[in-house]
Length: 232
Ligand SMILES: [Mg+2]
Image (cartoon, rainbow, N blue to C red; front, side, top):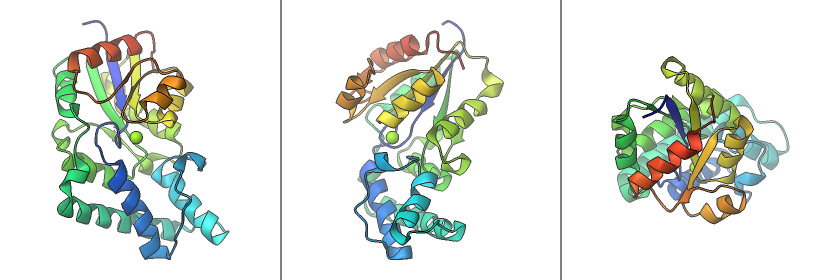
């Protein structure tokens, strides 16, 4: 068993296979609310790769002036409405990443593991995506774009949500993008990667990357190894 360990999961592309629908609704909401047609959708070029960081920067890049809070809020509300509509029209766009439920159930059954979600998505959209993917049953503590613009800030908030369960002898961050790996490195946490970007992650130094979560036992071993010695 060992001592207490904390798993900090990203959401989009990591627990829920929502990247495509999320991306489309995010862009459509800019078109509908602000008339913005843009092709600047490589989020890695934005200062903060989170909804709260990207939304004002899109408006600033397009109009050449700082975004107003009200403009960001309008985009956010429209985005969540579009996601809700997409959830009804194409529920297949919100599936879990294969094996996510089994993995979370396995972690939930182990008293030495604690789990939080730290996502760059707005809280309302994250709750919706967790529900549509069938992952809301785990009732996981959630840190979101509502808690900060920088991913590192959101991850730190996620860790703080588990404060009462610690201290942790190990922390591991689980994600699908290079920015997730960067956040793990920033705090000296372990890292486990997943998904189509796994080759990029491996090239950047991540040694434990998976196609999906179907091999629960192997993943659990990887999480334990990566958490070892990476205290919060
Ligand atoms: Mg992700």
